[in-house]
Amino acid sequence: MPDTPRPASVSFSEFEPVSTEAWQARIARDLKGADPALLRWQTPDGFTLEPFYHREALEALPEPAAPQLRPGALGNSWRNVPTYAVPTGERGHATIQRAAEALTRGADGAHFVVADATTFDVEFLHAHLPLDTTYIGYSLTAAPAAFVQRLLATGTTELQGFLQHDPISNHLPNVKGQLQELRELLTLTQRMPNFRALTVHAAFFGNRGATVTQQVAFALATAAAYLSELPTETLSVADVAAAMRVHVAINPNYFFEIAKLRALRRLWATLLHAYGLPPETAQVPIWAETSSWSQTTLDAHTNLLRVTTEAMSAVLGGADVLSVRPFDCLFHDPNEFSDRLARNLSVLLREEVGLGQVQDAAAGSYYLETLTDTLARGAWTLFQKIEGKGGLPGAIGMVMQELHEAAQAQFRRIATGEQVVVGTNRFQNTREHFDFNPKRLLRSREFDSTRATYPSEVLRLATSLHFERREKKRKRAAVVLLGSHTNQLIEESFLRLLSDQEQPTLHESHPVGTLSVLFSSTEEATLMYATPEQFGRFARYIYRIADDDSTFVPPVLITADLATLQEAVRVFGFQEFTVQGYSTEDVLARLQGK
Image 1 (cartoon, helix red, strand yellow):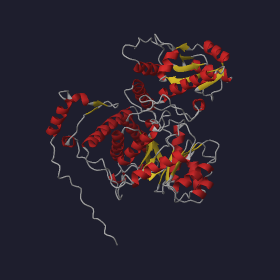
Image 2: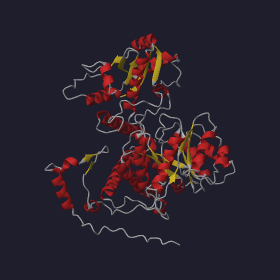
Image 3: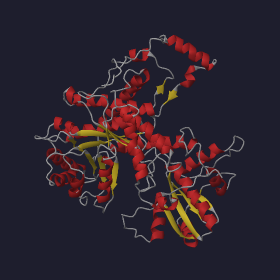
Image 4: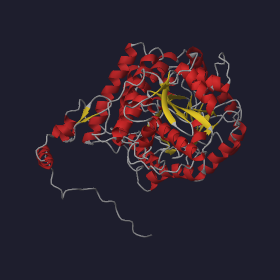
């Protein structure tokens, strides 16, 4: 047998210890007299980060920092679980076969987002992915107990994986009835230790712009609601807690996302202690998914960089399940190339980077331990505020208002360039040729309009359509919905592109809360605004939809012949958005980098 080198202990004795004072002196020297306080960073959560942390930071913590270890675990293990969407009307055969193939090529499980659980072919699923041995997650919009009964009807006695149906986070109607459905679900799966039937959908908030503090607080508030509302005489608080896992969205803020998961794990133990549960029950399984909030359609290969840092944050923060979104899932149908890249990222982090060899790699870091404590305290304070308002679901109005304000602040930072999104608001590829159809994407109901870069993207896509239409000289016109609150972002984006001498005084352009639209014909493109009611009536008129049809959702892109659209825009009272001293064409061309 060949000799195997013995592992040597890690030692840095050749480096002299450096005191805090020595570091501070070096910083002062490098700043050449500038105030070190200028390097402090004000976070979106409202607290200040220092530019430098040393051992005194750990001594200042209220409690000694301790590693967050999983009892009985060897190293840092996580499952690589890709996500697959099963649209309404499909039985899921092709999707199931994709998942089965992925399990032979590096995946450790599969997660199905099932739009219609009644048509999903569970017999076919069981034939290709045996339910008693395959780790499978399911996200449902309704009737989870009936769906699990169908799974068990295949002859499977014990499921592996998890189920996500969270009526509180998704504020579904008839919460009382939904809670009864969850009680039935938990009773069905009560003796399945490897199946978590109650997933807190905290990713709902993370994918809509919530700060990290808000995400943790909202997750705790949702969990507290279930711990308070679900128990019965036959279903204890401990049973409810044992069925839970938390689904989080991971964004590209690398260290913050690591600290977010560590803060969540710490506060979860505090929450369960408040319900009288012993410490050994306080381990929370975390399913982390790279976020949709941070993905872009512009210069889309930059998404590969984002999901890499997001995945690293997830596993270093302690996630036990990781789902990586394909970089082109916003605008392409599923394809083997992007699926393979997403699937292999987790394999690379485990096998080549070695992130699976040690638990809680962040433990003891002066910065990360301080950041974890700060986030935990902020999240607990916000959680208590929600509970003081009656808790969820009663306080959902307050939660959604805070979420809206956080998202709008981030939209504004992106518009002004304060927050850089490479390829979208900084370092744009102005000669980019899209390998997708912008018109079809804007018309699609699946196009995700909740993302951070949506206002910037839709303006670029819409103006690209205008310039393309002008080249083709087609005698048709289009109205493209840019979204609410977008006019201010257009102003700020445009100002950022002008020199100091060129910046004009802007008009007070439109009332708060109106919608931004782009009217585009072959001859001209005009930025306009309208109230939501005006735009709704306009869309119904163009598509001849009855006023009492409550199912109609106005599309982002509306096209018609030029004369009809011009008359409709005039009748329904759309107002032009003006920038003093510049025509609409000037604004659009400048925003396009032309």
